[in-house]
Structures are given as structure tokens and as C-alpha cells.
Image: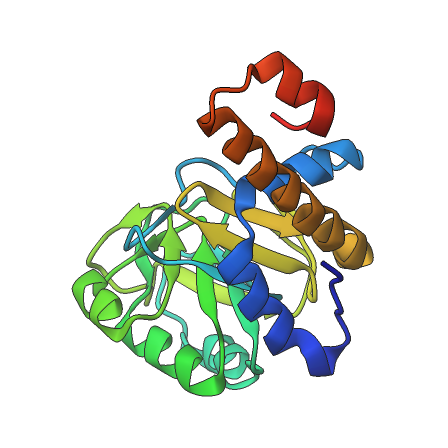
Length: 225
């Protein structure tokens, strides 16, 4: 399988990744390439087990605050209104637990702009409504209070850290029930192509094991485990 990543092919590529790839195989491939810290913290979980997404990182940086500023949502609104189709909104909050930064309205706005999902190392609210909307969101937990006076967007389209992983605008982010993987922009084509090849080998390995072949013999033939 050959992965094509120019902007015009993003939707087709990300659809294919969501159907055929898994975060585990992407992490295996990146390990082999020397990128061994590309999986976000295990505390970041999907709001719904079936949620899966792949897309390009739209980064947002938020910080804790302890007062209510005059325009508490100014940069947050600007960031949301600048979302492009096939974006994944990636919010670095510094692992904040002060508020439910993300909710139903942000999910609705992101979906309307063409985003494929959102992930954050902070908390969310309006979970039932988000799940009913069908917009894939991954987060570190749930809390019903608003971010006003507790958290503030201080930048967007900038390098951030989310879930212990450095994320740059344009990196490719994939998430499934196993977790969230970040593919640096510079290695997307190589990593995704290698992942498709590994999936093909794993399919052959699984078929042979199911027929009773010994694991050692199958490993020698295909080199995957």
C-alpha cells in the first residue's frame, strides 16, 4: 500500500488510515525509525470506545488562570474559527484539571469547520451530547465546570506538548481505543507506508497462526509479532 500525503489527498489518506491502520502498528513502525515517544499518556481516553480519527494537528495552547479576564474566550474563538477540513484539534493544557475545557459547543463548531476529531490532556464536559453528536473526542477526564476564570487559550498553530508528546502544526495524529499516536510531519509518508506493509504481514501471520502454525516458524517467515 502506498501512502500519498499532499494536501489534496489528505481526506482520502485519513479515511484509509481510519479503516486499515491502528495506533499500535504506527507506534511499532516509529519505534523502528527511532521515534520512541510518540504515544500520548495512557490517561487520555476516548469518550466512546468506537471513536477513531486520523488527521493533521491543529494545535492550541491553554494555561491555568485564577481570574476572569475581560475577553476570556478571545483567542479560543479565533483558534476555533481558523480550523480547516481534516484537522485534528490538539489542545495542550499542561495536564490541567481545573475545568472542562472542551464541550458540546466546541465540538459542534469544530465539526462544522471540517475537523475530524479533538484530543486534549485536560478535561471535557457535555460528554453525553458529544457522544450523541458523534464527534470523536479523547481527553484525560470529565468535569462539569467552565474554563472561564480557570483556563485561557494563550496561543494556537504553535508547537505544544500534549499527553507527554511534542506536537507541531501539521503533524499527523491518529487515535483509537489503544490510545493516541503522533506522527511527525517530516516522516508521515515513510511511517504510514511502513505501517500499511506491517499490517499486511500481520494479516498473514494471524491467518497462519489460526491454522495451527507455530509462532516461531511464522515469526521467521514474516518477522512480526
